Image (cartoon, rainbow, N blue to C red):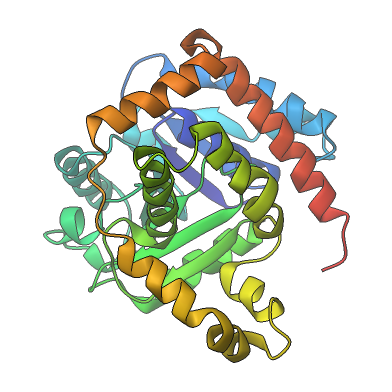
Length: 309
């Protein structure tokens, strides 16, 4: 049985552990804070039970949990693994230190992947003897429900490492996408940033309330985007496909983007949006609502699995 090391037992590390374990791989889980990996096992057990109840895993949850083992040390965690999935703090220096230690501990054939949400691998792997086996494998939260994984190598990452990681992600049921070069924030975050910035602008400029902007996505764009991307969407929105769409709507869309100057997240607008959200959802209910979100995602994933491609 292939063995995977998951380094960092927070939310994303726990989610990765479930992704690999439900695919039949053995997982070694470690966190630098004593007791965190052990505590994570109970949280993982609860999430696996939810997945089983939703019909998203067929195996008994305890069988999947049995493939995950907390490790006492980093050396113990990475012993005999084929792949390391790092989930440390989102800061360059801790990642640089951790990857130096991983590079020292792991044989050359082991891939070292980071779950970072926006730090390019080139910023923390450049001085490593084994830098060619390092890359970013950026998931979407929570990865055991949202399968997309962005694979982003540094300029020196061996292409074979990217290919191997893509195959692993497909093997464990994720949906990998490969970036041909590093960009600030990676692709998914850049797409999200464009939409979020425009949403704030609509509130700032008095065009619409925060709740109604959410409705535009939730009950409008999001319905299509749950099973189609932007290019397929526009391809189907004109009889002649993409070129016809651009011919019809290009001037309108281009004019809109000319108005979309960089947005600086001004404090007054952020405060207005936050006030609307707190009126709708007090802070003490965020965890409850997050659990609701995950149950809705489970139902959506189950529905999509039952539909023809």
